[in-house]
Length: 171
Image (tube, rainbow, N blue to C red; front, top):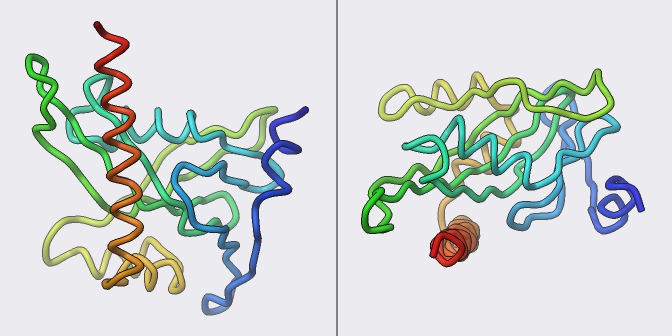
């Protein structure tokens, strides 16, 4: 079964108007496959990219999970949670939790992530959020309350499970 066939059926797609364009938003969840154009980005590809490019300590000492906020043309929008652990104790020493816009190249046989944008910390966060993300996605990224807390709790559980698995396989 092809990757697209395996994942396309369970994805619930809806169009959400965002200003003068539409953004495809997909069912929430942790580490879902992402459809960009007619291509599928597998969760392992997205998590590896986040680990190597977004995590506080990029590379093998980091684990990441994401939830999909939407996709628009050659871009996918995720909320990422990445933790990095110390080399000695395996205890998380730093983390980031933020929205990330992934630039995806779909011109080849496989979709691949070719870059990303993320809002700055502090005073520039809101201006960056508004300039990087479509309005509907920016609104979701700014949500607080039970839904946002549930999303972060799910991401935290996924990151903790992956970190445990990595520690066990290293033994």
